[in-house]
Amino acid sequence: MGWSMALSTLFWLALLGVIIWGIVRLTSRRGRSTVQAPPLSAEEILRQRYARGEIDAQTYETMRERLQTSDRAEELSAPRS
Image (tube, rainbow, N blue to C red; front, side, top):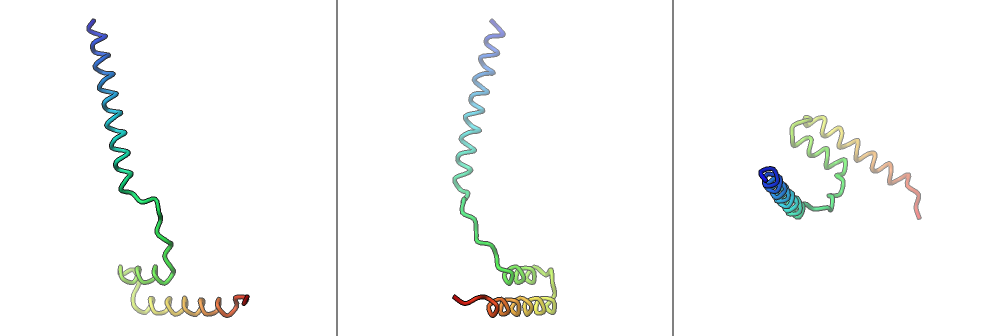
């Protein structure tokens, strides 16, 4: 009789734990958005790196000019429809 009571108690505690775990999982997913932000442009990434201090002003300007030059070259070489 002692074992059956212990197993019964263990069963109900396990069931309660699973129910609580399920509720927590369901409610924590509601706040998350499944929509992803659009990818950042190369210039935006460059601005963020400069703002964080990863690159200096001279490097920022050099890289920004290269990006603008490559963008213009792509526009000129793109076939017109």
